[in-house]
Picture 1 (cartoon, helix red, strand yellow):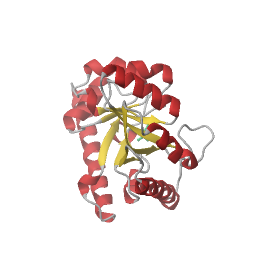
Picture 2 (picture 1 turned 90 degrees about the vertical axis):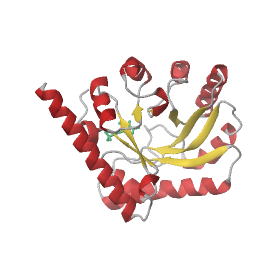
Picture 3 (picture 1 turned 45 degrees about the horizontal axis):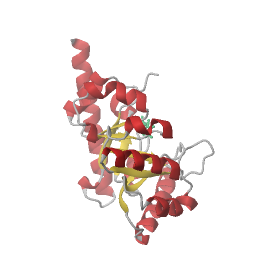
Picture 4 (picture 1 turned 30 degrees about the horizontal axis):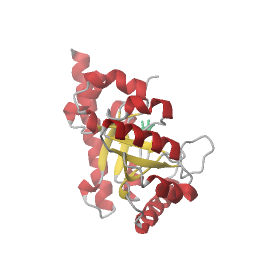
Amino acid sequence: MTERLYLDTVIADNLARIHETMAAACIEAGRAIDSVSLLAVTKTVDPQRINQAIHAGVQQIGENRVQEYLSKIDELDIEPQKAHLIGHLQTNKVRQIVGKVGMIQSVDSLRLAEAISNRSEQLGIVTPVLVEVNIGGEEAKSGVAPTELEELLCQIGGFGGIQVRGLMTVPPILHTEYEKRQIFSKMYRLFVDISGKKLDNIGMQELSMGMSGDYREAILEGSTMVRVGSALFGMRQY
Ligand SMILES: *Cc1c(COP(=O)(O)O)cnc(C)c1O
């Protein structure tokens, strides 16, 4: 009992602190406080603790792995439409996840976009997606290269089962505030550039960037959605 109460306050306190930091960053950047939303990243977190966060005010969650998410879904006090898939998605898992989340943020290939679209059409739904960009150009990271983004968007704009809502990125781990802001600013410029092209059937409302270690900098540079895990739930235990 004592431990349960303790956890409740820790998560609620962390959430309050994150909201304060987000609001302060919005004010510093001259942006409206409601222009950035929080996605609580719940990978490795058990349903009971996720629900504590939801009861403390979390309105949307992000999960990385299809299997892990599906194993928790029935126990969560949140509608599946408020859950986003943010981890790399293999084409052979598309069948299992489409219709069970409100958004897929990790689309980074034509093949994957096509698979999500086809499955969505089978179910008679349209799945909102973000295209993941590898802004740091890192070898081992998923995401489309900035130079290939426009071509991919043009190819997938015609797919009837998906609706592109914007971009997502996981930048390299950077240490100084200056470096963090530089990479987020590069991403924001790409986002604005692409928005300006007004590609057919491509929406650019969401720019998902910023995690526990850098969400303040991401907001200063134009993020509309931050994905925060460990700052809310504590260090992950794998
Ligand atoms: C784990 C993860 C996060 C959250 O990371 P924290 O540093 O714990 O906030 C955000 N986005 C993606 C894609 C992740 O995999």
